[in-house]
Image (tube, rainbow, N blue to C red; front, side, top):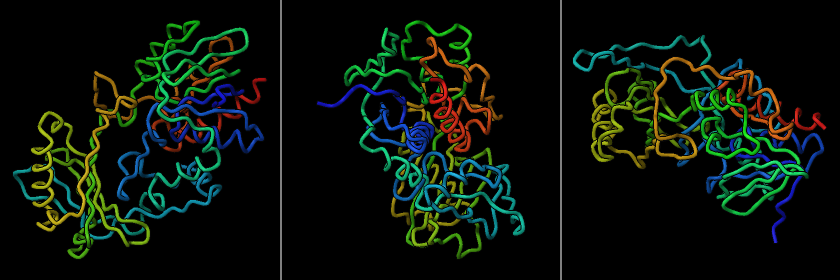
Length: 349
């Protein structure tokens, strides 16, 4: 029979939750469990056929990502940006072509896809992760906290909740959380919750042969952003980008037709010679999105000071990308928050 009792329970096996587990382990604390609602780990990091449908890029100033990659010995490489990029500002007018400054460093990507970080972090504590376990209630009792799920009741002294704050409001907390905190949680935008991503793999990087970077930008048309998404070793070739959210309301077949027509117009008919074609609409992912989708085009505010504190008489702590005061919403924020939560919960005793 599985042991459902631990000193700490971490809610969510995304980047923040797995970073907390990794840090607890490094600090010598091994008595914890990780509960994940999905049937997979990674949260909003999702790599399929070598394509990142979730978190993808980071920059030189994202030191928490860089430090973690170095620590777990996962490599990084620069986003491909050589050649002509395409700016589409009016579908009725000719496209504008531009080239990036070769002296300006491009964003980084993770070797093996972003999921390589998840796989490496999880390897340390894989026996402590319970997937397909959805939490309905977190309840204080005399001995600590009861975590009630559809996969049994778990007990812990303290809990780190790393899922998006808005999603966490579905959990019944007893005693109740402060009203102002709940209001903040409900109003905290969930990163990626409104995004649709598309990814295609190809036998050859045909766009490079035409001196295209693979970058296509424009708020008009079926695809608002597209990038070369080939792997670090340049053995697998792909394009990945964001789909115009207005296409959420058309059928999957119609959306695919419009996407391919748009890309064919600017990159060439070779787009139709894809090996794989995939979409990921995060609004359909219950663990990420909710019924009311709100698109945000300005950077939302993350890291509200209310997330710094323990709740339920010092037994519950919130963590995750949206709670981070440092690069909130980014992988860097998720990692910072995961490390901070692990250190904070150990020092709270």
